[in-house]
Amino acid sequence: MSFLIFVLFGIIFFVDIFGVNADEISSLKKEIDQQQEKKEKTEQELNTAQTMLQKNQYQLNITKDLLVKTENDIKRRKKEIEELENQIEINRKILESYIREMYFGDQQVLENFLASESDLSLNSDNFFQFLSVKEKILSVMDEIDKAKDQEEKAKKDMEEKKDDHEKLLSIQSGQQYQIKSDITRNKATLSQINSKINKLRAELTNILGSSVSFNDVISASKYASKVTGIRKDYLLGVLVVESNLGRYTGGCDYKESRMSDYRKGIFRDICKGLKYNYKKMKVSCPPSGYSGTGGAMGVAQFMPDTWIGYQSSITAVTGHNPPDPWSLTDGVVTMALKLTKVNGVTNHKESAEAKAYCVYLAGNNWASYCDNNGTNYGDLVLYWADNYEKLLGD
Image (cartoon, rainbow, N blue to C red; front, side):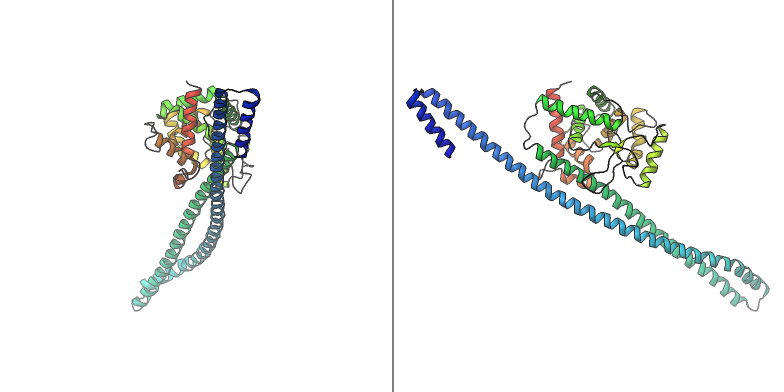
């Protein structure tokens, strides 16, 4: 307010001293009003950004807590599985001992059973007693095996949940960076688009291990659009947001990635099928801000065990057998295949496209994070898809 009073006194001063006319005064007042509106708008946008940052930090803390809890659950499950395995081993040794004893005992019982009619009922009891003991031990073994299978399944589910938590943590960290660096989401300029394209191109070159131009990216997106029915500009929007959220962190080898032994085995098999040296192929690095693993491959950033689940679908579309995670074309097609699992994407419905990217980021269990309580990642994709179309055309 003091600033406005000062400006008004300045206007009066200029009128008195220099004879500024009424039109000039009106113009100055208009400019003051515009500056005041701009100031109020900036303050409002800043408050909104700060609120979003607080929400983001809250969600980040919740996810970190979930990650710690899941890791503890996995450790507990591992211990229970080890105890079950020890129990199975003990019962297996007992069973082996019984089998040895019964092998000879059954023969004696059978001989007595056949030779002595007078002790027929006694021998029958002994014979069936042996069978009963066997059945009980086998039954116990079967129950332990079932329990172990259940524990293994629960452990695998928890590891998948841990992957989801780690992925979400990465997303939220990227979101936090974006909120801090971009307080407002004004309409993109051509220079902003080009800046993001250059960043994306550099990151794709890094994770694929060979030079990638944006024309290559456009060609791959056009091809994926043609063979899957997905919208090309939508795919380009996905690629830009993936880059902006810090999802492309290629540059590590399989050892540096801290992948599990299970995933390392699948990774080696994928490389062997493509005649690649698995020691030299680039994968995503482990996150630096929290405990987690890397190992995601190529443009789609799929873990090895996820990639093999898509191999037959990729081959059916591209004819590449085996498909290559480090191929720009195969990678973008894989992204498209996963995105088109949400109904309406191939009909180019924006609501379906927004939801599909949310699911792509965090899985079906985390689609609720892509709502209007924070940054809506689906809207971000549509925003960049729209600006790509308007500003770059083609």
